[in-house]
Image (cartoon, rainbow over all chains, first blue to last red; front, side):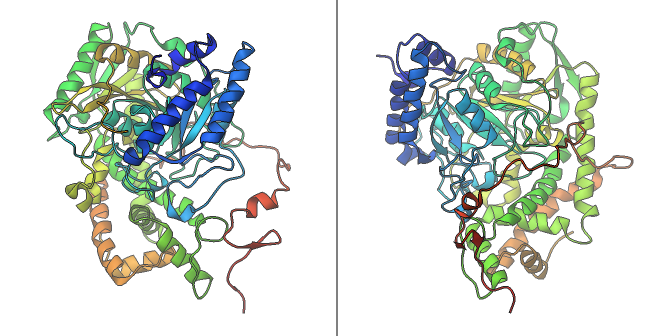
Length: 494
Length: 95
């Protein structure tokens, strides 16, 4: 029998419908992969095997009747940031110890309504703050990819490192993820998977642990562009519970796949060509340009002069919002409580022990930039710069550009516990230099695997689209996937 | 702009995070690295730019001011580190 875990969602959807195999067989195949691999890769922080089998059996009954949802019987992993009823939901933080919500996030509700099966909760950087999945209370996630001839552990990227690793290592068919500054697209690029952050307002944020509310968006990580389109369609919805959810009908994203890109205008922003950028990234970008040109797209040079200011502005806006959102963790209503001599000391002790170093750094930066006398100098200025960043994009769209092509990351995956990156927080932040502009402007962005570097590590290209035009990203992304092929790590684990 | 260790301690107090002297010293360096990085924004000409309030041009949605949910006190207090009779228990606040 073929290895069921090697199937794409599109293939499994067909196989399940034809009754070639059952969802229970599919689910068991993933559960046994997880059991074999998780001690080494640390992708899951909670495996819900019984729940998964029950959901799979229910899907099999539905499928036997010849009916079923768009994801009927498809086993997925869920990032620990999504509230799942009665199941481990801790944003991989110590401060949410033992928290099991009595409610379900809108995104996961949508997935279960479409018949998906939950395998468990996926590791992530604490509160989605990080670019290497090394800030999780539950330990580092390990990238299934290694350099050729090396056994050094590499990071999967972050914050959705568990999601990316689980997909790349065949520990789920697809995964939910979230992206505040690049947390879907950077780990997707580091693991040879496809990740899309949709337009702000496309997925409901209800029931997703908040990091930076004006930037956070949910999206999928999957093996192929088509699989990511299938998941996106189910995850997205218009939700009255989230006032920033936008009233636009969710289109059939799969319909865009296979459509010709002939005549589409693809912008190439000069400002994404950084000093000191590895030659391989530059070459990959050029390859992407050539592929799209060969497919009939028109390539145009564009200028986005405020690009370099997106990351510094982000490191004001995101911590400011985080310091406010994370004020709720005080040892009173949920999670950890560390006693003190009075209530204030109880708060202080709880938050000192409950938050990791990166979360504390961001809370302190956020508290500082919002404190009396500094608001105008930092927060207000950053929000003005954000307007200018968005204006750069608006001008490109006004000039007829349909999508923008850039590298996804400035490098391939790096080593776990990299001394250089840990000595200086800003160096780690630079990982998001190509992705963060998209969050600042609220746009959709997809990372598609496009090649391997000289060490055999995957690299990704990013496509940025107009607001609510995810369809064009799937359309163009498929052209890159067709040209680049797909990438699978050599199995050394399990 | 940069911060000194005293300022870090004051901000940590505002954020209700206990920091030791060693923590505060280490964090001072880290926070200054970040504040130094964001200083680049001083180069930007922000004249005439409105601060962004929303990336999507949409009027804030409003719902009818009605009860849509409730009677879930047990659900709400279930995750509390200490609760009694559907109340959250905290150390004494008023003498």
